[in-house]
Image (cartoon, rainbow over all chains, first blue to last red; front, side):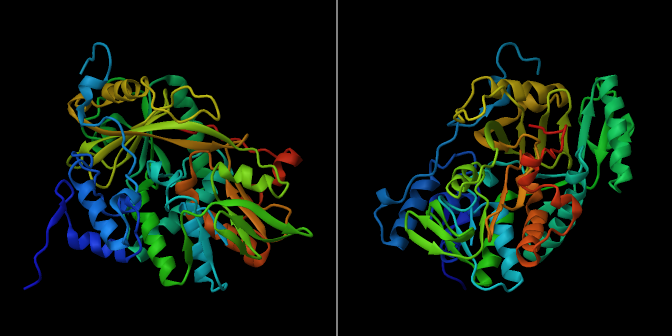
Length: 92
Length: 371
């Protein structure tokens, strides 16, 4: 039986073991980890998973969480229906 | 040494390492892919209007097939469908099809029934025709670049990320290395593939590359079940839409931008692109928009890249892809490797893409740049 694992990112089903493997492969900044593992690219937009990822990466690199730069935030901050973003009277 | 850790730099470094040329170092100012590579849509096509683009992209597509198998990343030949709504577009695209066919690219016109089969749920009521490029496709920029990185590392390529090249060191007409924010690095061969930054870096060696940075915009929806495989182009607006590997719909359309403008979010982009595609895909208003971002097309005066030698011994350039850098990377890597190791390009078409064409007035023209 393998050791217990934990989800870091529930939207994209990324586990702690996935994160540790990616860091070992040389993906040692948040922007690269996000794109390697898709952490933070699901509907939560990183709200839950990025703080976890920051703390894991900071510990691995021996840095403080503040030294591990945050990934860039992209609009819209929460997922929105396309219908509400079409402007004016949409035909849809 | 390769300056620029995007897809062009990585593909070139990997090609050089596979030819056992000795030490290969990649220098990147941010993280790998941080420039244009990770902002692009991942479309890969040979359906262009210049012989140079068609011939080089046909080769690139062969190489995408080989690379994706060897390295195990997502690449699929789902095709491109060019949607035409006016008679004059149909005439232009018929001529384009004959041109493609004469170069061995099997594009063809679709009748409405075929179009409905290839793109289910498309509203075909406005369509007067559609050109289908079955050889075209799509890849995941993240997977492609990261796979090349892991393979290159296995071949002992060294990566210096968060390292910015400030100045090229040139002595007596030969490149000797580069000054970075982390010190000087010696090299007798330097490839500059840093997008718009190429212009500034080559200026330090007294070389002018005519590049303009033009902001472009894209958005992506939440993922949905696979609906259709091809990338769609609305020829009237130049808008594109593609369902990516994970099921999200990624789309873009041009909004008026000044060259050199900061790529700031534009209030008019999101409604414009959603309206264009809702006219084709009546269900689109029911999808959920996840993210919106901006990137650059690094344009040259003739919308073709600058690839090859620079006049300084050992110094090579690959930039100005005008929106096509991702798709061209494998063939560009092959051509650059040929330039570096054999002193000449692999194909005649690539020989026409050197920097000297601007001074010599041998510009090429490309009519179809989208998104």
